[in-house]
Length: 180
Image: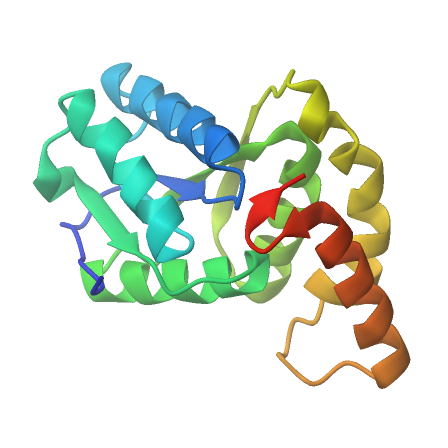
């Protein structure tokens, strides 16, 4: 999947994908709702190819015009989400737009922190409430992940000790791309 850009706008809904496609679909539905209500003019979807495909199915199924959707499927984590989203904004000339950051409630604080640290965007948090018991344990796992893996903001290598622990946490969360 190649990067596609959208027209310049003032308010952009940025949807972050998740390996759990149910979470990704819920986030995409929230973005579609914000678009239909006129709160966002355009939508940018970032994640893996699989996650972005799921989001596009939701957006197109909700009747959102394709020229209002921007997407990039080359992200593997929240920091990558930021960099891919930044490339989309530069391409569309919307670097100064207001961003509605759409992700799960358990992920919103870390995602907003990363986006604010790495960029100078006006960010409005739009958390999606997740009630699935299979994912609620992730709320309390966000803190160690924040410090051990995802806040590697400069994409510098982690120490072996940090990397091993971060990888164990991630492997516990995901089983070959699927949530346990």
